[in-house]
Length: 296
Image (cartoon, rainbow, N blue to C red; front, side, top):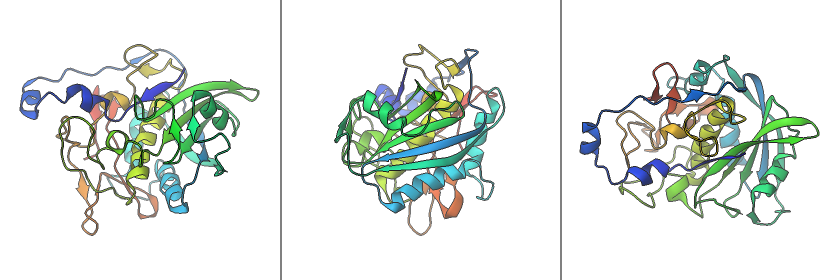
């Protein structure tokens, strides 16, 4: 069973609320119930399957992000300090590292993919309970439901090697950056605030980082639809999707919240990574406070 994630869902649903009205409403505690299932803890290998054409720079932005999740080398606020919130969920830490990378640049399955194509691509790396196979589709690849109801998915599948998890994230640059790369592009609906400058200079890939971050956190805390979530298992609110649209303190529908600004490029970010990278990472639900936690 796959779980869908749309970056702009909260913005769409709450766009009719003004910030002044929202401030008058006392926010209720957000509770994600634990459903007694397996979580992904310990050492987790992240295998990357690149479908379509990505430049080496684009691939390095994604790889550096994953390598930043458990690195203590970056200054605060860091990507690893964001990821440490997952340790507050049952079972301790989840240490992610990049494993195999598979390049599919020849579009062997075409440029219009369905769910079964994504599972087929994910199976290019062996499924295992201690790994996550991530399928990344290029900007000229359409996926069923992409831009209409989702920016990415996570789910699980069985193969001869066992049961494992997978993630799909698409590059929305040519198709729907206002939905899947916000706040780096003008939103399709809702309040029309000026877009922020992407920290790595690539609206599509910086948007992919936001969606990948969301789905990695959702996967380790709810890998088999029996972990932490609120609502029905077919359409759950999970660790980060429960906090959609929030990137910094003071956020409200149409405004991502406080962010740091690069003095040279003017780009907005809220987390430092390895190799001098900067990223914009979404809020994550904190089990200790029962609230969405931001880095700044």
